[in-house]
Length: 327
Picture (tube, one colour):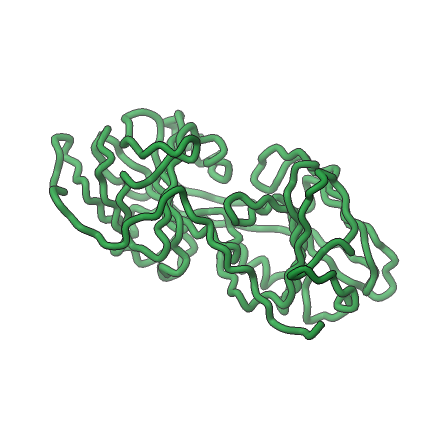
């Protein structure tokens, strides 16, 4: 097979409905609560997030088939419980980057589509917890083990993933290093193979005042200049908005479950905002049953997050997130 830049797949994860792409403002002045219904998010409203992603390395025999075993995996990098037989996919990617460069790009959520040389995929159709690397394919073609040579310029990254709505949800990761002299042909993953350490602050930045029980709210982020990764905000990375509610009002506790926030939320609403800089929140729909967003309630904690759910966005933290002050 000819060596070529294939890049990461440019799949999009669309929400339950697509947001309007032309903003029209009507009666958006202050309500009886004193809060406006047209909200302009600024840098001071955005949360802060830093991550330190650590991935282990396994040396394997070069240019050889190998077995992948994740049967000992019971908790993923976000602290979520995992049944190893129910994972959906394994992803194997060759990069022309060093391990540290890959880690830096994951931490900064800054992969480019041409960072990857080859991307192999395997679907767990039989609900098993081991597989042979010979089962990996690329666009229907089997893996070419001649690529697994001891080349110091290339790095192989393998990930155990699920794929909800077309987005890779990375559960565990490992670097593979074909090494001359190695006879190892088994790659075993467990709960300690990789770790995602993070620091999140939901309390230092200014919350946004929002009226209770009123879904007719416009959220505009045109005034935001920097995303949570300290990059200039690029709308090319914006494609999904999430409104989430957790029953706990203690932000210390919410910060503690941040990477599991969507899993522990009792209400989640999605809206496709691909490339947009605003959203009508009344167009968001429930992830549970498709019902429309009914407005914020003055209990628990409400957040609105703007995400990149494309496959090149490997860090699970949102680009923007604001805590709502419901009045």
